[in-house]
Image (cartoon, rainbow, N blue to C red; front, side, top):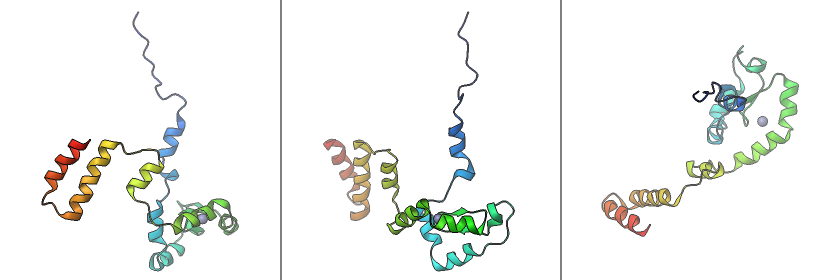
Length: 141
Ligand SMILES: [Zn+2]
């Protein structure tokens, strides 16, 4: 008898799907920093009634890009720990891709870093002797 093939490869791994659901997806910090600019802020704070959003989209926390069901809930949220932590995070400059990868534990290995270094230098000094730098970077690794 051959091997029994398991049909349910992802048994009990609901969280994987939950994480990728659109509803769970919030804006990134740099997008929110964009929202906080006065011209965008006014627009987001006065949204039209929207049945698809919690509380019809009327109680929106700009900093957390999150809708509350009621005015009371929004006020409670504004005093909450999550919100205050978010305010602190927003005061810092926007993340770069590299930083966010490091934060997520996706460290860049030596080889990749070498390449990035070359690219950075290429941008600084022009493409003139980029090829030579790429070769020298490879030989030092
Ligand atoms: Zn908030």
